[in-house]
Structure formats: C-alpha cells, structure tokens
Amino acid sequence: MARIAVLTASDQASAGLRKDESGETIARMAHEAGHDVMRQDVVPDNRSLIAEHLRVWADDDLCDVIITTGGTGLTERDVTPEATRDVAEREVPGLAYALVANGLQHTPYAALTRGIAVTRRKCLIVNLPGSPKAVAQGMDVLLPLLSHVAELLAGPVDHGPA
Image 1: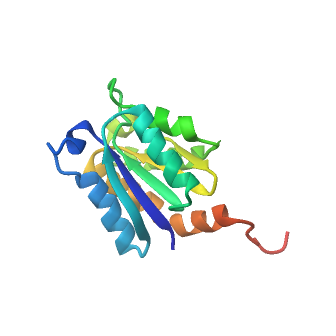
Image 2: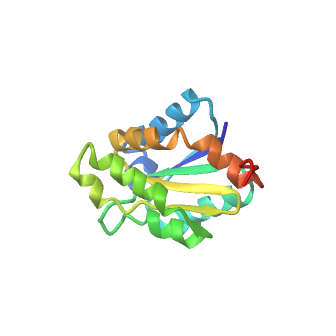
Image 3: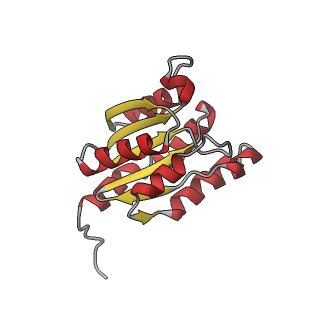
C-alpha cells in the first residue's frame, strides 16, 4: 500500500467559502483502497505556496504519492501544473495521458485539463482537476497503480529474469 498526501488548490475552499469535496473524495477513495492518507491540506491558488507544500512533503519523505486537486484549468488563477513543474525532477507523461483518455470517455472538457504527473525524489506528484466527479474518475485510474508506484520509487525492484 502507498502513503498518500492530498493537496487542494482552491481560493474559495482555503477561505472557508466552499467545502473541499474533491480533496475529501481523494482521501476517502485512497483510504477505502487500503492506502494510508498521511496529510490533507487546502491552499489558495498560489504558485509558490503550492510548490512549497509539494517540495516539503516530497523531500521530507512524508508520502509516496501526492495527489493535487484544483488549479489545472485555463483561468489565470489555475497554476497547479506550473507549481508542480517548479519542483519536478522527472515527468511521467503516460500517467497524465491515461487520466485525460479516461476523462474523455466521460466529457469532452477533459481535453482542457493541464494536469501533469512528475516525480520528485521518491515521490510521485499527480494533478487532478477540481471537480469531485473528475477527481473520482481520475482516482479510478490511479488507485490500481499506487502500490506499484510506491514500490518502484522506493528502490530497486526485481522484475524477474531478463
């Protein structure tokens, strides 16, 4: 099982004007799948603040996977992918592609997401949209992969005979 941290980027939720349904959905689904939710925070749509959370959580070995929600759209305040790139060491484009491909089965608006997936040290960071429905669909893609991701990032894995 993987250790998960959830970061919600939302001006309204961070100000207490809206409930963080998307972050709650991620935490609930991860917990129900047997993963440990180590941390869950809400921050405003602020690039440096988002990046700082990602950096500290990844560098302090708090978790194996950080899942963000919010800030992946086209508005000026949507800066989560940029903050994620600020801390990234390697990209994981196939995962971002899988999330979009799955989303497109539900809505054409999935093509508008700018969410990315990257690694930093031994941590995977994945951006999901802010919609609770889109988050649940994204978690359906991520959940079967998380234990294997945690195992791969932890160190050498024996894949059997070459």
